[in-house]
Amino acid sequence: MRQFYALLCLLLFSGACSEDDTPNPAVKFSSPDSDVKISQDGTSAAITATHHAGQFVLTMEKNFEAVPESDRSWCTAVLSGDRLTVEIEENAEELRNAAISIMNGESVIGKITVEQGIAPTLSLESNTAEFTNEGGGIDPITVTTNQERWDAACDAGWITISKEGDKLRLTASPNPDGGNRPAVVTVTTGCKDNPAEVSAAINVTQGPPSLILEYTVPAGGKIILPLSGAIDCTVDYGDGYSEKLALTLNPATGSLINYEYAEAGVYEVSVSGSVEQLYSLQGHSETSRSYLTAVKQWGNVNLTSMYYAFYLCSNLKTLPENTTDSFAEVTTFKYAFEGCSGLQTIPASLFSGCDKVTDVLGCFTKCASLTSVPENLLAPLKNVTSLQSFLAHCKQLKTIPAGFFARSPQITTLKYTFSGNTAFETLPAGLFKGLANATNFEETFYGCTALKEIPDEFFAGCTSADIFRSCFFGNKALTKVGRNVFKGCTNVTSYKWLLANCTELVSVPADMFDDSRKVTDFSGTFRDAAKLAVESPYTTIDGVKVHIYERSLHPDAFTAPKSFGTCFRGCTALTDWDAIGSGYAAWTK
Image 1: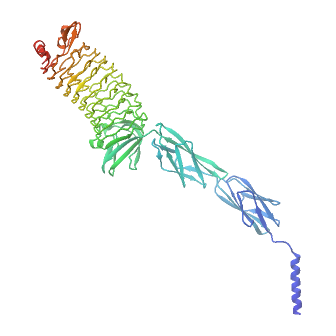
Image 2: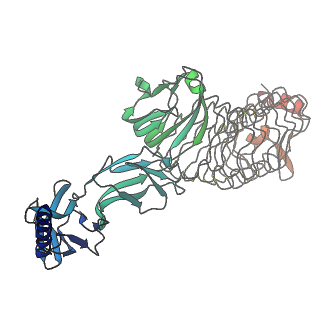
Image 3: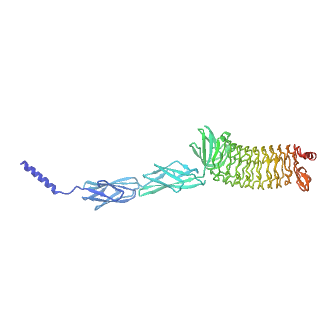
């Protein structure tokens, strides 16, 4: 009996299985869209979408009547046959997600997840970047975006770009032209189908070169910058500190820029922007001036004046070439380097582009370490007419290049120009050739105590010359005056103290004043030339010697001298000394 019931149950169970052959519901997704990722078993999919509205099409193999259901209103799914279309709306707010369930009754048979990105945003810490002419890097600019990726590009080859996380680094190459140059760096970001959807620009400028000064200071040393007048500049003190300055400085009232260094060292101070004047007179102490050891670069800072620029900066040793017309707006170099006793050389291009300069009075006076000067130094100074005291008291300067004045025919005044240059031993013949407009040679070589000889025709052609007062006064090593020194000098009125105190002078040409017939002042001309053992100068008129002390007797040939006291005082070796003493004693007293 028990066997019967067991068999019956088995038959009933077998009958139940054979009555329902429907398989379990299942789906399998596929899609050619790269933004749709299908799981390994095909039962789920993940859609990654940009913020734009759009559609995604999937093929869905299924063995049941499926119904797609989305949990977000902005994401819908429509099933047509095996084609499942997922549609999303534009996203303007924030990153969002949706889930689409493939339903079989109450059961979830498949699932599609949707992640939609947000509209890209982009902001920059700064929309401007400024570089000095020297180039180099600046502080990085922070880039803020809601996208994973951003890029940057520049429209100029002189800018180099690098990225470090959210930092944009810009580096500029040096500017060889010296002027302002612009560039634009464009930063972009966006979704993957439009990676440059949004952008922001950085306007880059590279200004003209900076003025760079070198200071050598002890610990606690305080410098005073040689800045004056209206300034609008950035000063980098070379120790990690910089400041922007926009004000008007008046050293006479104590308005100065001071800076103190904590540690001893050599510092390069860079000034970029606009500076009206360089000035080191009032308010500047001997100590502060002594810290300046070099000018490394002139730059372009819109200077208009170099008046007392580096006055008494005794340790200033070197100056750079002027390669960018740094002084194009400057009108004066008056006393610019006076007392720079450590200055060793003058760059040949210092005055390049100085078309507006009119005054160089005392520019290099007392530059006691100078041993030479460039031959074409003066050539650019077309509007300078006076070289008064220009290179006076340069005690190691031994001579002047022969062509020093060759391109300066406009010069009218050479008063004190080389006065006190005690190392002058020789002067080139023809030094003043072409200076037909020069009128004043007062004390030009006064106190040049090592000068031994005045070359032939030294002032020949200086047809406008009027004054030679004390021109060679005190040249105690001078022994000889060359031939035709004053040839063509027809307008001279004064030879006062011309060769006074030239105690070693032994020879002068008898005809040295032949062309100078308008002279009214011979006061002290040869005073104390005790070794002058020749006949005093004379001009031959109709076969008759007319000495300079006899000119008043020949009014048709000469202007009568009015001042002549001490002309021959102490010149007892003259061969006509007795004649002078007996008839023209006033010329000796």
